[in-house]
Length: 146
Image (cartoon, rainbow, N blue to C red; front, side, top):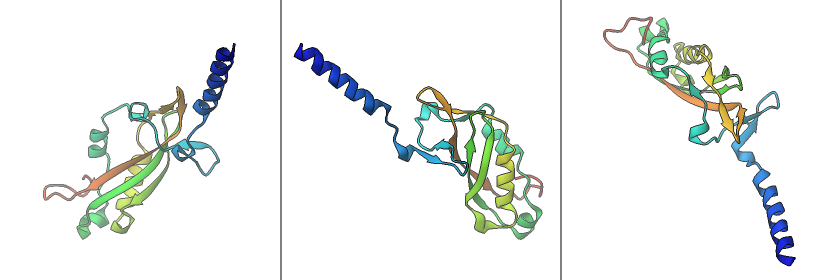
């Protein structure tokens, strides 16, 4: 009888630990909703298209940056919503490049097609993503393409 009670207490006690969520894995977005940062690789949000091709074909090199010879990397952070849409795009690094490159990176990311949303414990969740966008000038490139 003692064994059954002990096993029952251990099982009930472990349920409480299994239910706890690590608060450093999520943050409150400006609207108060939870947005996850740390998600296992197999559960992360994923584009349902060729992201490399999208990033090759959609940015338009700003004329100001092209004429000034400005190039570099802009790192943007954004949220993949539960429906896969892109939300709350912001520049993390590369603002100092200027010439319209940070604004173009935000535009390109904000206009991306929907992604497959992330999952956490079997539920679809909002998640943060970070994406670097390289702006490089080529001798043969025209000002409207990277």
